[in-house]
Structure formats: C-alpha cells, structure tokens
Amino acid sequence: MRIEGRCHCGYITYEAEIDPEAVGVCHCTDCQSLTGSAFSVFVPASRESFRLLTGQPNIYVKTAESGTKRAQAFCPECGSRIYAAAATDPQTFNIRVGTVVQRATLWPKKQVWCRSILPWITNLSSITQIPTQ
Ligand SMILES: [Zn+2]
Ligand SMILES: [Zn+2]
Image 1 (cartoon, protein in one colour):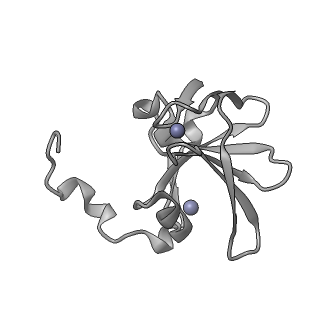
Image 2: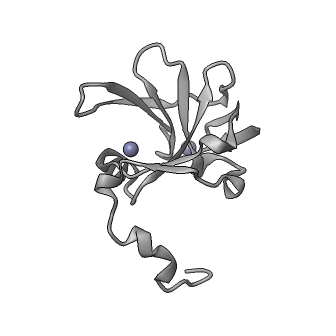
C-alpha cells in the first residue's frame, strides 16, 4: 500500500510503499527514551520505495547493546522521528507510523522487545478514556 508522511511542522514530507501486514510495535528501552513515550510503532519500507519529498532529516546514530549502529532520522525543526535505518548503506527504512498520514488504518501485527514492555500497556483499554484533553 502507498503511504504519505509528514513531520509535525511539515518541513519533512515523504512517500513510500509498505506492507500493512508488517506494522509492528517496539517496546525496547531505546524506543521508550527516543520517543519520550511508551513504545514506537514502525513499518518497514524498502530503499527503492521510500522517497523524501521535502526537507532533510538530522541523523542520530545509536549503538545498540549488540554493537549494531542504527541511524535515527528526525526533523531538525520539530524533532519528529521519521525513520530508523542501518547506519551505513540502509536497504530498509523503518518508518515511524506516527508520521504516516494513513496511520489510523495501520494496525500492528506484532510486538517486539516485550521483555521491557511497560506493565500498564496490557491494560490500556481499562484506563479512563476522555475524547479530548
Ligand atoms: Zn518538522
Ligand atoms: Zn525499539
């Protein structure tokens, strides 16, 4: 499926082709601190299909426990995370689904790094829900 994306401020826009069955949630502690939130939602896009339309992201290279270096791309203006990819010669861009225009239609099909899942997440639907702030 074809998707379009943009950061919060609109400086970065992109398009890509993705498989909706490949959407996932990552509960790793790096994603928690990098997002400032509980988890990240990602969907891979091949290098051939991912196209930046406007803007140029800044790159932060994180080194994982395993030693693997991953480039974390974010908007230099508003800080929105756009994708993560291999630090050198990336073949795949793991798009951050929160920047995808069609995100409401993308349901995660798997969760990874569940050993560091925040314990309340499994009960999210039981927490009081308010339509706006
Ligand atoms: Zn931005
Ligand atoms: Zn993660």
